[in-house]
Amino acid sequence: MTVNNKNFAPKLSVELLSNYSVYVAFICIFVVFSVVANGFLSIDNFANLIANKVVLLAIVSLGMTIVIASGGIDLSVGVSIDLASMAFIMMIGAGFNAVLAVIVGILVAACVGLTNSLLINKLKIDPFLATLGVLFIGKSVQQLATHGGSPIYLTTGAFSAPFDAITGTSLFGIPTPVWVLVVCIVAVYLALHRGKFGRYVNALGAQAGVAKYSGIRVPLQLTLVFVSCSVLCGIAGILLSSTVRSYVPLAGGAFLLDAIGATFIGTAISKERKPSVFGTILGVLLLAMLRNGLLLVGWNFFWQQVGIGVLVFIVLGLSFGLRKRTE
Image (cartoon, helix red, strand yellow):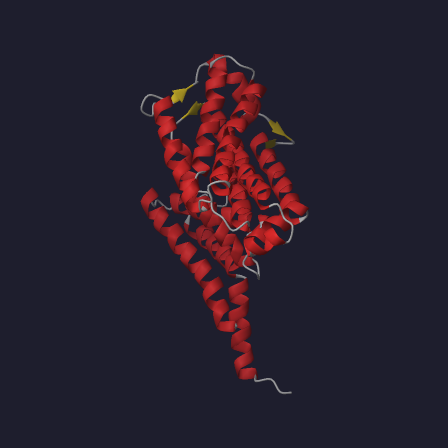
């Protein structure tokens, strides 16, 4: 059997570019901004990048990863963030213990995921439409609860202790929010890639009908999927409100598109094009680094959005488009 070397080499190059498009994009962006953006390589910039750009988006994106792996989508992640933040800030403002405030905030977020799962399981509404409806309702709830969307600020010294305990402490020189992210990464990795839950989630994502007849309790698994996502978003909401020491209505909506983008960018590193914890974190780092670099070179927010859109097109276009050429 002979091999046509003229065709084999280009095909191999296309396949490598398809499989490693995310890594290529990461290296290119890092090199370009290292040259053109003053201060990009400084330790202070990287510390700011991790603390302010990566931690919250990564936690939300981990939740989105679980949902997309199950074959669904969650458009209500911003609602989970906001309601957890609102509950937490209101509890602190009312003088309740910080631990109780955190628990209540996470439980409120979990209710969002539970609502999504009930709509999907009981009413058989598509996840896109179910979570879209919850998104609209959640926005209205926030506006009604805050008299039209007025922020709640707790900036006086009397309220500083619980916020300092969450975002103002560190362990081995690493801020507590980063450790929270590490715990979330490990927990989601073990659940999604090393546990029975992950096998069930992947089965739902591949063929939900077949999963049902394989003995998988689909309603239960979908409930766990959406509640897990909302809990992770609730954690992000509490970290957000602890950082700014306030609750700003509808602030969580800013994470939705980036979380979806990071998750889908992460699928490009998998031969099966499935979401993964490692891929999602890489996608988050890619988006955060791009935003940070564009900010340092003076691009405004709207041009940053253009840059992110172009990045998504390039990475996913190379990954999925070139892959078809090799099949």
